[in-house]
Image 1 (cartoon, one colour):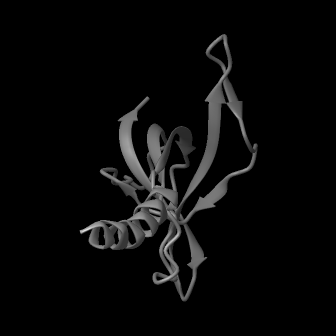
Image 2: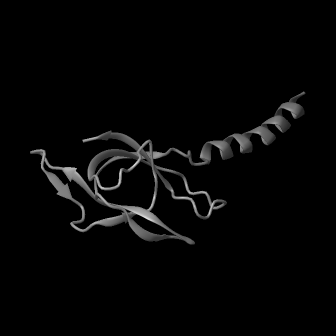
Image 3: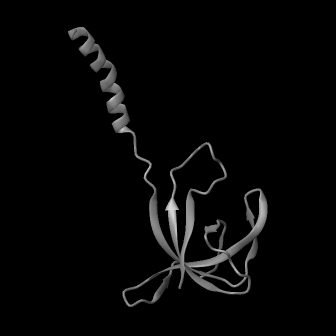
Length: 120
């Protein structure tokens, strides 16, 4: 009887400690504010060309003034879930960026998902 208990502990203990030592795949989320230009531009998106949004990301200072991370328009290669751009209309958005765990099995996937929150 004692041998069975000892044997089961020898098998279960390493499995339990291994499972506890594995990192949890917790997605990191952040809020991003962006100005989107009125017109999209053609851009290289890996193996194909597509129309990309042009964006300027920013935060607000303590007085509510926009502080831009970059003063120049940058290509935005990803889609924003829940948002459809209307060509010719500039817009300011609040977006949630969800940083996904790296998956080496999927080569051409962005490691960030963007979700529309609201127009400002």
